[in-house]
Amino acid sequence: MRHRTVSGTSILPSPDDVDTALICSVFLSKEASAAARRGLVLRVAQRRLCALSSWADTTTSAGAPYDEGGGWYPSRLCRARVCALTLLSDSYSESPSSMRSLRVWLGFAISLLFIWFAFRGQDYDLIWHALRSAEYIWLLPALGAYFLGVGVRAVRWHYLLRPVQNIPSRRLFPIVVVGYLGNNVLPFRAGEIVRSYALSARFRVRKSSALATIAIERIFDGLTMLAFMLTASLTIAFTRDLRHLALVASLLFALLTAGLFLMVLFPAVRVRLLALATGALPERFGMRIEQMAASFFEGLGILRRRHELLSVALTSLLAWLCEASMYLLVARAFSLDISPSGILLVTAVANLATLIPSSPGYVGPFEAGVVLALNGALGINRELALSYAVVLHAALYFPVTLLGLFFWWRESLSWREVRRAATVEEAVR
Image 1 (cartoon, helix red, strand yellow):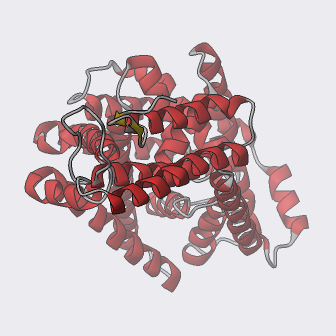
Image 2: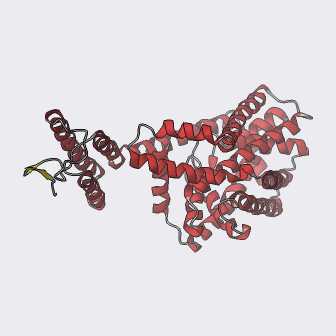
Image 3: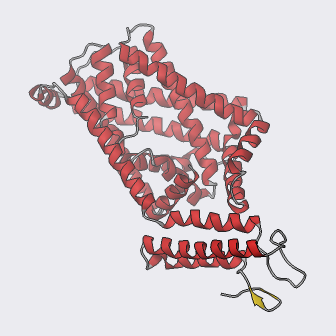
């Protein structure tokens, strides 16, 4: 490793040399363990910090970047870079993997808790009888209504992406389905990251911009569910649990909506918050975060376009009405006499329940939400409600997952790249 000299005396390497050590550690990543990579980077960083502190204490020119002979002097900027190197080395440790494993196990634990809630006190003979007696021919029109709704979601995403790139809805449909695949096989709604990766790989849209449009989607989805609950409340008496759910969801989506509009309509506030977030970081990382933030806010451009925002609202309503139609048709398979208001309530509660972090496919919270609405508010017995929830969830899960696998294969996408994108997204959090 080369050294710069002052009057023939070797002093610290340049910051580029320190970065070279980091690059070497990344190269070793294919053959060395995570702990070995972390140890290498830490040793390099610690040596630089010790040498830097010792040299700064014995020189009177520590604040100057170079002397007249071209030698490099350490500065506070260099201290920040070496400290950043030490912190960055944590990304090569085993702890992120351990944290992901902890989150996955936590998700499964939450799912088991909700499964227990849904199945407790059930008569399994009655459940089996309801499953055997169902007329599954109703699943055919139900799936037709569901995939029509998925197509409408592709149209909605087309409107959201217009400020970034004008992509036809038919070309977005496979990516929307791939996103459903991700949510069904990965925990904690990682399908949103999968969808942003697929869009980036196919159309070169920045992942931050794609995630911003998906964030707007989720807010419109939540507001639509609240509108469904409000409509249902006109004719159905809510239980205490349903009132609490409506209150919490209203506060959550009101805050998220206000926050996004605040960031878009008042750039000065956005700039100030971003400066506070990046002020203590090294310049290199601060610039990277600022670039990602710029891409993210570019994806929020639809919030400045009133007419297209109306189109997003209408397509959100239409997409969820299509899915509610699926819920109604599956109810016909079990001979459930549920009013349109009741179907809107079941649709809203079941989908709001899936916001709770859980295992892949929302197993547990979805069933608990359906039982809560059908049994608690509509008076349908728990066994029949649970049988309906299980079949409905299977119809929502398996067809779109299989179609997503087909599109994944056709688009030649990579799970490794998705994992890398997820790691970067966790680091930004």
